[in-house]
Amino acid sequence: MATLGGIEPFTTDTELTGQASLTVAEADTAIELGSGDVPVLATPRLVALFEQAAVAALAGKFPDDMTSVGASISIDHLAPSGIGATVTASAVVEATDGAALEFALEAVQGDTVVAEGSHTRIIVERERFLGRLA
Image (cartoon, rainbow, N blue to C red; front, top):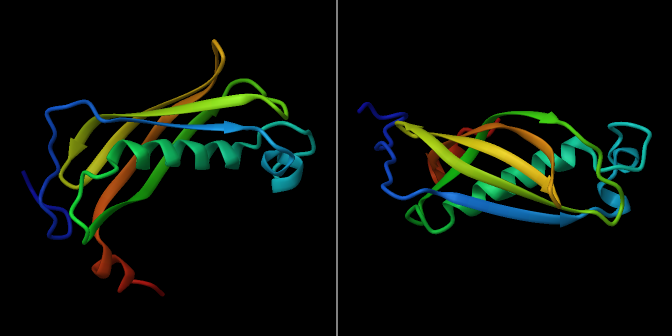
């Protein structure tokens, strides 16, 4: 397997799954985040919840000098969630390609799937990554 940016390929024999939950508050709504004019869970906040779930899936999997960063995300926001609703996002590593990790995403409110999608994270060396700041 090839390396990406000098980082060895990441492999795992176990399923990596993470979750993150949110009880929707006013600060999480489309109105507050400027992504719409209705008091429902904003898509940008849902994206952040998915990233939290992906980060949780990888917790403790890297040495201290390594981390992962989001590279891309694609979601379909399928149903609205109002203030007070609890939304739980799950992220499951489906594939690895060198330092790239591909996640399948799903968010539910009770038994209702409110969003689904995919997310790519890249494993990086912290100092090298931060050295690239503009």
